[in-house]
Image (tube, rainbow, N blue to C red; front, side, top):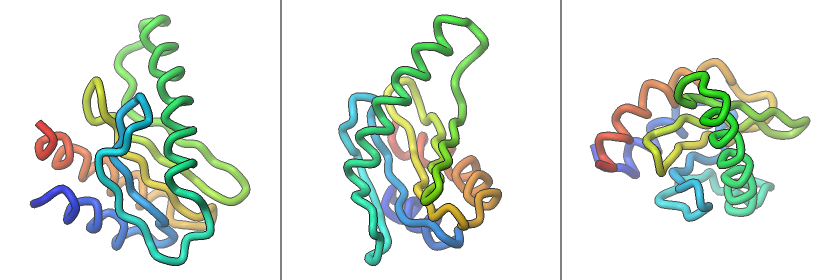
Length: 120
């Protein structure tokens, strides 16, 4: 399945999903799909969270508790679920705060294997 199709499958299956992005830890987006009516600047949100994730990844490496797999960030307006795809890339699902968080986690985990294969 092409990369964009996999991203759309995640976006379309999660209530409240706003965007799904594949990004490098340096903040460079690889691919993204978004809903049209989003009130948030998805690029800015993704770039800023990439910076945070880079620091989390570094902390996990320093304390030697295993490899980073997933991070969730909740605010009063959004929830962001991040799945690591490989040493350089991650996928992030950005959703409304009242979106289906459980299904978002499930779909991102399920499709992360496909995304990692498509990117290798």
